Amino acid sequence: MKKLPFSCLCGCFLALQIYGVECGCQKPFWDILGLYQRSCQAVNNAEDDLVGKAKEAFEEAMSDVVANQIMPLINHVNALVLEDAEGVAHDVENIISNATNDIDDVIRHAAETAKSLIDHELEEIKEKIIDGAATKIEEVT
Image (tube, rainbow, N blue to C red):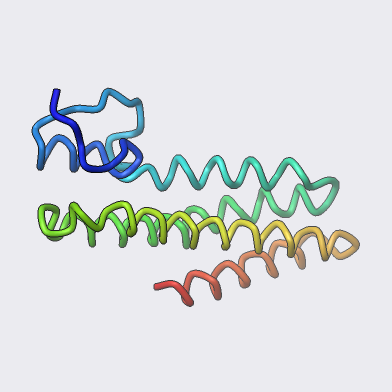
């Protein structure tokens, strides 16, 4: 098997397309860079530190944030990488690292917002989380 110039998390699809090898991991085929899987892990980790209304609001808001803000960002990053796969192969790790950090920041900010508003109404907490996430996503795209 050929040795890849980047780790598996940087894209099984690219490994197959550019280098003719498969890594054998079990990521969903459309999560070519592993960003969705990493996002889900980050949400779960952030959720562990929350309680009560903050946790409930975070869970509900993150469903919206992931579907409507993080997934479009992931799709955008996937498209950038696939646009010129051979030309960006050496930059893939940087692209993945930056996107992962950006998504982590969105999720961390959402959890901090939920914690800071624990004594507020559920809908207000959700609204602040979603609005804050939208602002963060706009900053990175």
